[in-house]
Image (tube, rainbow, N blue to C red; front, side):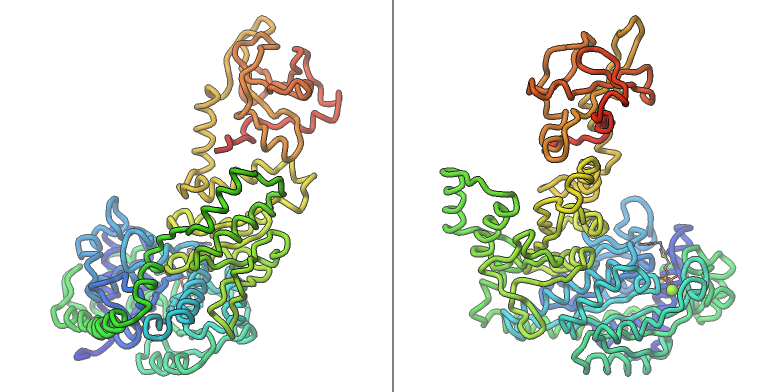
Length: 600
Ligand SMILES: Cc1ncc(C[n+]2csc(CCOP(=O)(O)OP(=O)(O)O)c2C)c(N)n1
Ligand SMILES: [Mg+2]
């Protein structure tokens, strides 16, 4: 390295403040504050090859504090990745630029995971670190020997998921996970003193982490702390003491730099303060060259790794595994044939277990687990022995009662590659996992959620079951296709199917709107027989075409809502008489049409 490191870091600062200024939106404070740490990381530690961003044995870098996305874009560009180009950085936060406000995994090859929802990046990194240890146990140091680095902010450490994630990482002894905490004591609202007095380092230490701190603006001290972390067998947290917006003389250290452009005057003052004379979006040649040099270390390591791969007898298996392709063998086909020949009459959880047993026997990359419901969801099979700190080659993870942590870790495993994660809990707890399920969908990842049944509150919650399923599907995207379908979108589609907010028809001598409602069935039956599945039947009310159930025995419970507008829709019975709530208990069961989703 030929230049003072501060100038190399200032290249990140300049790009961050200029891009945010040009977009008139974004977060300059975090990239400016952590620029020195990121420069040390890239120059001396991170194993990467900018010419092959998907190299299987690269270190994984997760910017958990996703709002500081300009730090990721600046470092990728400076380190010589093909993208983002300077033009793309100029267009930060603009339509069609891969430099989105928060980094997205499929926009740029060097972005390992979509971040922005605070806390999830770090929790996802735990999954990456698990996948690394698992594959290392199978393929050895020659092929799999990398680390997972995380830059996280106060927010990431404050979120509840952080507790689940670090508890799991500490328990599994994931020593190759290193978290660089941007310990700037500032969040959006101002000082962290406003909202927390937690001893974060003590919490990490209590969950089995190595903990250290350093001056985040002193390269030598940063190196000292990282070296100590590398020497320790436990996962590591390094509290990097920084000033948010470092370099902006009047605003640094304040929340004013968190999420707003610095303003032309402050940008000019920062340039003068940093001795940065280049025009916006111009990197002086000597600084650009020094940054490009960082990648050479990784390129040499990559070349040596290629040689080892070529001479390895596990080469084909390894490449197949990392490609993500799965080809169930004869045993699985025989299982499917058996199902067709003689469909078993078993509970859903048993059916799920049977399928998992057949699949895990055939597909080695399936790594299962459960949030402490192994025996209820039947997720453990004879092929999946436990994965723990003494044996990472296992294929079954006891996640503990950490549904959100489990789901985020599964995202990380899927993103890492070489592992197809599945994990179980009750459907009713899908709400606990929801943020991570959403990220599975947004990131287009193959994550299998095994939620065999509702369990808790089967009776009382059955009334709310469909909305819950609807929310989950809104979060997850449509099953199988993993495409995000928002709840609003679902509502639009439902309207389209049912002919809008209701059917206009004449009833009682006036124009009315008729809408379908629930059939008054409880729980599971309602789920199976929701109106979207009902056959068109006779028109009892003579109101035009209506849908009604094909099961005569159930007709008496079918209620229709008929009203003058969308909001006041009194209920009518099939015989045309007005239904009064006090008539029977069934009144409780009337649900608005919006409760129902078609079963795909
Ligand atoms: C789950 C979640 N909640 C809230 C936000 C909105 N948000 C973005 S950044 C931020 C403050 C984060 O503070 P910190 O991590 O200390 O970042 P810094 O201000 O130091 O850059 C908040 C609340 C979010 N992105 N994700
Ligand atoms: Mg902060």
